[in-house]
Length: 476
Image 1 (cartoon, helix red, strand yellow):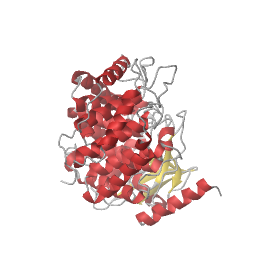
Image 2 (cartoon, rainbow, N blue to C red):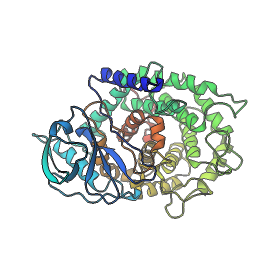
Image 3 (cartoon, rainbow, N blue to C red):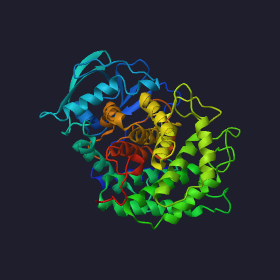
Image 4 (spheres, rainbow, N blue to C red):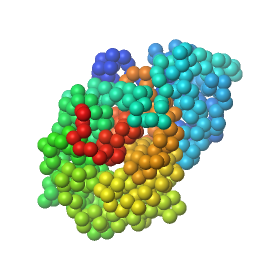
């Protein structure tokens, strides 16, 4: 057995011990070409698959001891009817969002879980036979997004995710990435943001351990005399966002110098043309990656709230490249000024909206970007071969730039939240319809809990990136 496999086994059984029960993880096969879409079935603890045009969910995996297994669901079954209803067809087009069997199943789970006798009826096709299975659901309240900030189910789900993250955090302070290398810094930053947003004082030591890991693994490697050295830009930006939100939440300025180093490094890596890349070099024949620019802007904007003086030339040069990257067809941000077209708009557009609103700059431009996010919110699970940053920055952008539309949008995403919700152990990873290799790199379990947690937390407006205006709010 390889050392990597041994580590995975040890990690899995550690989670079992920590959480008291084995935590179901959907068995996902990433589809880079979009020919299939694997996704979790929420509290049923099973994995489904859909292809373009499907009305029936193909069961790919059934968790041991879960509601699906207890009801007799088997791998290879096809779910035909949900509570007696035929689903609409699934489409792999990103604009269609969750339309089809996912909406019907998520809606039914949410509603039926709140009944006095919480049952779900599924008609399944097993080879040539049709049969009806009855599933006993863990009782819960329904999501109530008419008042999302007081929704008891949302708050409990966020607390469950936060408790899971605290238990799953490693001694080093990091959260498990999908691969070795530097993915753990990015993952840890977002997991730490969830714990901040949940506002539980008991979790503050865990947040600080996460910061210490980020500091040691990434920020301490920065040499401002040589910007070609040190962490990658996406890593540096996430560290800056995390450190700034921590200071704004707690009033603790212990890590302000580390925050400055992150922001200064990002400034030094903006070219005269305003382009940025993964590192100091600019990919795509100098075209760069706007997804890096916008995260840098968000780090700068949040750091300014902490007392950091923004480098106006770097902001101006980078912002010039951002403006040139607007797709005239969608009104959203594309890959770069050289390639403004892009179907996956959410991460770039949402992060830039958030940065501009936080900084109080170019608000009109920010709101125009936000309107494209609202109009095309079905695309939010698709972002640079990832789902996580599309949802995290997509919802923060809508909350900041189009607050009047926030409730309607999050209500339409309720089936997503329900299908990601586990009976224990936080959230299951629920990615997009196409390539989610970036999330796989970050770690399905860690980043899956982080992205669902950040969507849930967006209703509370504690984090500045999610509409917060008050400093020193953590624990109050």
